[in-house]
Image 1 (cartoon, each protein chain N blue to C red):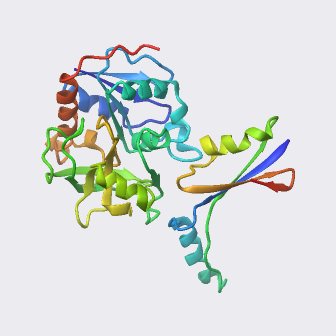
Image 2 (spheres, one colour):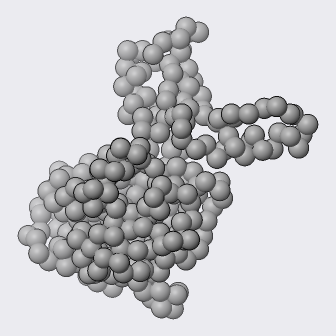
Image 3 (cartoon, rainbow over the protein chains, first blue to last red):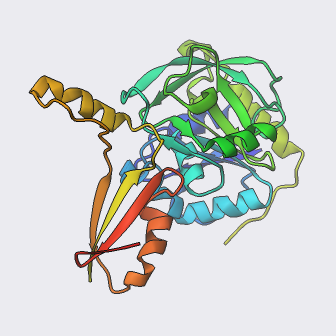
Amino acid sequence: MRFGVLQFPGSCDDRDALEACSRIGEARLVWHEDRDLEGIDVVVVPGGFSYGDYLRAGAIARFAPAMEAVARHAEAGGAVLGICNGFQVLCESGLLPGALLTNESLLFVCRQVDLVVENADTAFTRECRAGDRLSIPVKHQSGRYFAPDSELDALEERGGVVLRYAPGHNPNGSVRDIAGVVNERGNVVGLMPHPEHAVDTLTGSEDGLRLFESAAAFAAGREPTALSA
Amino acid sequence: MKAKVLIRPKDGILDPQGKAVERALPALGFEGVSHVRVGRLVELETDDPDALADLCEKLLANPLIEDYEIELNGGARG
């Protein structure tokens, strides 16, 4: 099982994501100018401040050469996880619906929150059950999930909401307490909380590991894709 | 050709930045100011003004959450 963790100028959670993935399988970093994802089963777009987050968070990173390869990987059915800034990048690139706005409080929030698994039939939640609670930290200033009501209704209808903040735990004013969403096919997931910071009880929780274990189980059921440019 | 692009949060989208500015004003003695919205202005020079709308849709603005207006050489457009 091979994980690839993207690395943009300004990424800061790439090393923790690499560490988390390494607990489940092989893992390597993929530089943002690299178009080659050959042999990689699961792609992680990590948190941070890609390209300084100028203009809007994730707006510039979506044009990175590596993102072309990620789009092809997703198109071929490969698993892609966007965490925090990575979630913003996936929304900006159109791989996931919606957008992330500045927190309602305007404050940077950094704390442990409880999440409820809403859809356990995705590439990153199949090792969970619907209704499970996961304790995972958030740390962001632009994490308020937004989509127009009509899109939200359609999203909920098709099981597009993967994770919701538990009652009282919404840290940013996200609509309908949405913490993470999935594409229609179930292979591309984005979330604001950081599962890669919750892989060891030493730091409070290892609930985040279940997302990476899920991805490994998902990828084990597929043939590896050859995806050079 | 010089152009300006004005980008604003769409109507109905909560703009906490505008709210924070609005709340700060009375403390400075400015009363009666409401509906503050904070956007951004991008100035640029272009050889192909016809491509500006496309450029706005793809990069300068996120059409899901923002509206934009293009102003060419002082004259409004689009």
